Amino acid sequence: MRNDVLTSLSFRNVPDTMALFEKAHIWIEGSRPRTLPASVGPAILGGSLAFGAGSFSPLKEILAILVALFLQIGTNYANDYADGVRGTDEERSGPRRLVASKAASPFQVKMAAFISFGVACIFGLTLVVLSHWWLIFVGVLSVLAGWYYTGGKRPYGYLGFGELFTFVFFGLVETIFTFYVQTNAVSLDVVAAGVVEGMLITAVLVANNLRDIQTDQTSNKMTLAVRMGESRTRRFYEVLMIVPYLVGGLIALSFPLVLITLATVVPTYGLIKLVRAKSVGRELIPVLGGTSKMVLYNSVLMSLGIIVSKVLFNS
Image 1 (cartoon, rainbow, N blue to C red):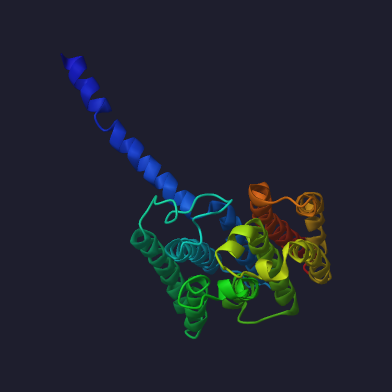
Image 2: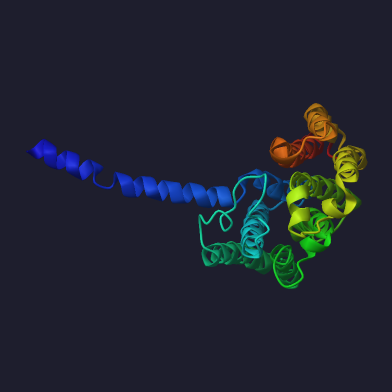
């Protein structure tokens, strides 16, 4: 009798637990985890350059990384919501979206976006208190850029400006201001690093839009890829993946061991080969995930090169 009771108590909530895990999995998938490694890369690199400049704050670095991470999550949920209510995600070759697949209601996804942006703002405000009050305007612009990528009546992502805003806000701004809040200065090295990160992160978006070019065209979502056409978009991706190695050479003049990033040349070439092979639709999903990882790998290796160069050579 006692064993029957224990068994009953042990397994009574298993279905509820499994349902909870399933819901968690859906929301994690909806946050688009393949894109998240790229979101923290610029903050890591900006912090390592602050270390190289002799003014590194671990607390400010952690806050900058968390701001970047939750801004990206918020942007992803906002994109899911806006595309879902417009019906542009109903036919797609990538992973399912929450609204389009009816895994969550538009209201729930919209609230997830607002909550994520809110968390980013909390960390951002803490960073503002520790640095400069006027940086609050940079944070507000970053949130607006995340929301109006596909939100609002005239989303800039539908007009072909997504790549430009991604380069500016998720590349240049994130890298430079992570450095600035720790050093109160801007250098040529951090601008070059922002260009490197901006181009690589933009390549993630280009890979995404290249994958969706047919469905976006059908739904009148005029991304830059749709406007440029498939062939030129593939060449654009190549440029975005190759030029960062050349720009990184400028940083190597100050921190020689940054050349360690050349270790990523082979996997980068592998991604370029897949794009050159005229892969389409779901065949491009590995390119999207791989490109996002390249942002993180390049950021970490470049950061390591900067830190070791500073320690060994007092660059």
